[in-house]
Every structure is written in C-alpha cells, then in structure tokens.
Image 1 (cartoon, rainbow, N blue to C red):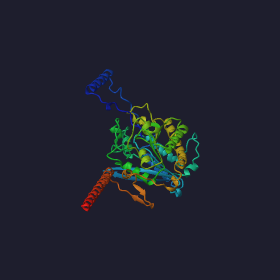
Image 2 (cartoon, rainbow, N blue to C red; image 1 turned 135 degrees about the horizontal axis):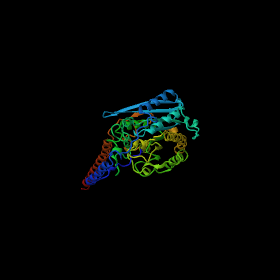
Image 3 (tube, rainbow, N blue to C red; image 1 turned 45 degrees about the horizontal axis):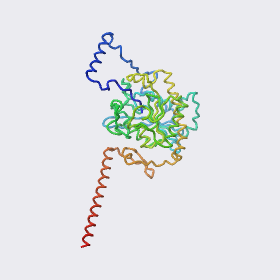
Image 4 (cartoon, one colour; image 1 turned 180 degrees about the horizontal axis):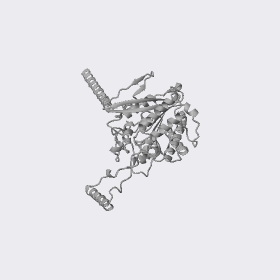
Length: 439
C-alpha cells in the first residue's frame, strides 16, 4: 500500500484562541532560551553513498541489459495526459529467449518505486536484476537452488514506476509520494476509486480526477493486460509487511486460493524474514483502508491469481517530517541487510509461486484460461488489449469510463421502460378486440 506518514499536528481542529496561545508560548520559550531553532527536528538527507540517483540507477540497469542480451531485454513506454508526460522502463527476464512465449511458464510482474520517497525499493529492483543476470548472487545465508526455478519463469520488472515523483524527491521534497502533478498512483486504480475515509489526507492520498487519469497507471494497466501475469508484487516501504488483498476493506478474499496465498506469505515471513513482518490484508493490518490501489485491481479486475504488496523497510522511531529516514535505511549495515533479506524472499517467492499455481489452477499456465468480467469491469478499463476468440489482439479505446457506464445503464433502463410500454399497449389492444367480439 505504501505507508502514509503519521498525522500532522496542524491537521487537528484547533480553535483560534488556543492556537494563538500555543504560538505565544512557543515564542516566549524561544526568547527565553535565546535560540529559536533549538526545537527544530533534524531532517536526514539522501545518502548518495548508498543510493543511486534516478538517472544513474536507470543507466546502470540499461548497461546490465546490454551486457546480458540473452536473458534481459528492456522497453520504454511513454504517454501523456493534458500536457503531463510520463515514461516507464520495463525489463523482461527470460533465461532462454527462444522459450519466452511458452505458455507453461509462470509470469511474474514486479513494480518498484510507485511512491517517489521510497528509494530503497528501486535499489532492490537493481539487486534482483543483478542476481537474475548472475552478476551478483544471493548471500550464502540463503542457500536456494535457482536453476530449475528460473528456467520456468518470465519476469517483468518495473524498476521505477514513478520517475516524475522521484525527481521531486531528489530536488529536495523528501516526503513526496505522489507523481509529478500531485496524484497518488496507488489511489488511481478503479477498484473502489475515490472513496474517502474519515482520516483521508488530501496531500498524501489524492486519487486523481478519475480512475486511470494518470499516464503512469495507464502504462501499468497496459503492461498487465498484455502480459497477463500469474503473480503481481507491488513493492513499498514504510514498514515491514507481506500484504494480500484487500486494501479497501478489512478482510481477505474467501476460499482455498486465499488461504494458500496466506500460507505462502507466512512461509516467507518465517524462513526468510525472521517473522518480522505483518501478514494479512492491507486493509486489516496497516491501520487504515486504502481505496483505488493497484493490488486490489490486479486481484479483482485483472484476475491475477497471486497479488501482493510487500513493505520492505520502515523506521518507526523517525519523525513524520524526517521522511528519508522513515522510509529508507540510512546506514550501510541496515541497507545491505534489507537488500539481502528481501532478495532471498523474492527468489523464494519465485520458487513457491510455481508450486502454488499448479495447486490453485492446474491448467492456468498451460491453456490460457478465459477471464470472465462484468460490464463494469470491462468499461473500467479491465483490458486495454484483450485476445479475441481467434487469438487476435483488439485495441480498446481510452474513453470516459464513468460516462459510458452511466449511458449504458440509462440505455438498459429505457429499454425496459419501452418494453413495458409496448407490452401494456398490446394488452390494451387485446382487451378491445375481445370486447368488440363479445358485442
């Protein structure tokens, strides 16, 4: 979900008289102490000895792809909306490119850096890609046999979903989580979009003007629709947690598949993460409900069988104003521990994912089973591209989804009313004929 910052003091309702008194006390205290800056909270800057800039990180990933063309490939998607432009880089891993279209392979989609201030997530993306290319290796503390596992996978990695938001963070706004025009990308998806809880924070959680109003979410939806993953992981920081749906309500999905998803997360937590993580639904664990999130869309609309949100780090002792420290490790020991632990967790997930898919959907990776969706899901943009019954891809235009849904329902209502009027007219005509015959 991407943990929100704790509430700011000035968001509480305070009367003008009380506020004046508080200001007066603070001013007097500053005068007595002779130092008006004595109570300022220190702000931790970005540690550039540990963290790449956005440009350097993407350049390093591009170089990695060029060094391993037999395993890695890279695409850049771009789009714009009302003058706002966004680009997203996607790296695809397939151990043998000749087999990438093999429908028996498990398809995994990973997104990092959806919130600009969560720099540690993009560093994890680089580490995972480095291990996949065999330039780096898992720590000896995590003995995993990956050869057979990796042969059966196709993995797409979005190393930095919110590039424009990251620019703002690197320019000095260390608490910025939104994109380049102030929209929270993890509130811009269509499931339960726009609903506001009592503790709604317009700065932190602006959902945009409509579902998929933002170029970044449009690109991610298109990637999902064309790739059709079996596993989705949205990677955030702010705490340590392994979340499954739902974010917008305090419950997990019902049934055996949901139970097995939870068991898989509990295994990850126990064996790779020393039971440090919360496990369960985001809405039931994090302390607030989140509406319009990517993971709820992936599970409910895109029908991704295993949809997760991983929170990989958080410093609960940090001030809510000290965002770099709250969301990112600041020392090299913790930095390396986070990358080592979570790299191992992801590669364990890759291994467990294939087993889970065979148990949950024996034919899921073999036959490309049909995905049935409601008209609302379809009009909400469930598919930018979908396969027709003949396997040909069809483009679906970007339209005003809310308006189309309304018009469609009005059309149905008017059709029912017309049918009712028609039947009533026939009934009256029938009665007149019967009356005439009886005379």
